[in-house]
Amino acid sequence: MRKRLLLDAALVMAGLSIVYLGMCVFLFFKQDSYIYFPEKTITATPGTYRVPYEERFALASDGVSVNYWLIRAGDPSGAVVFAHGNGGNLSDRVEKYILLSGMGLDVYAFDYRGYGKSGGEPSEEGFYRDMEAVVSEAVKDGHGERIIMYGESIGGAVAARAAAGRACAGLVLESSFTTAADMAGHYYPLFPVGMILRSGFDALSSVRSCDCPVLVLHSPDDDIVPYRMGRELMKAAGDRGRFFDLKGGHNDGGIIVSPGASEKLREFAGDVLPERVP
Image (cartoon, rainbow, N blue to C red; front, side, top):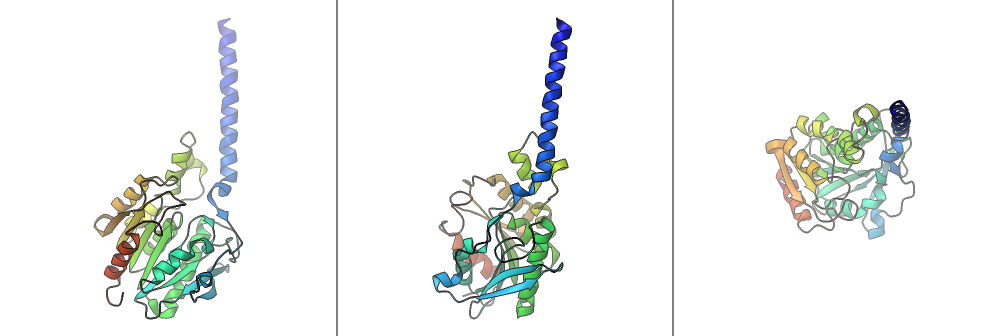
């Protein structure tokens, strides 16, 4: 009887192990569908709000065409290159671009490959190439090192990587996570995410590596990216860092609905680009 029970237990454990391994294999091969949520349809533009803008295309280093908008500020003190989150496309953040433009900044807002009108397929390395292509356009337009890298959610890792790779005026991280592995571990604690994940999106290391001022914006009520990750990014920035509490959840909060956020951003821009911010 005891041998039978041991055999049954072994069979159950073997079955569970097979199911577990199967789920690991599934997550390995399907992980991109849990990371990228691109939308092709552009639902709004700055023109929707009667704000003039230019639609442009940049060429990434691997030949992919990157669609971006330029909202000019008239007499800008510098520029902001905006890397959005992993869902939708650049048309879902138009109000943010207009807010930043109103601070005396030329706004370069772009879509990653596979999103909106940009070519190619989403990938981590591709995202970095897309950001670099648009930053290079801002440099060509005369902004030089007077550029603020701005990242929202997964865009925080993209913007932080850009800030660590070249001299810039500052870095803003809105509702951003530390690393893809930390996020995966938060949602899938029973799986060996370090072995499964092919993507790094390591904002934490990039923040440690960059030497520019950093502003971290995060809501205690963020229902997707834990608030503690925003605090960890702030800690990684050390003396270069500033922090501001946003309001609302990950997708229904942010700088537009958070009282004081625009003032904090204007103050940050004024400090890192002190000469001509109105």
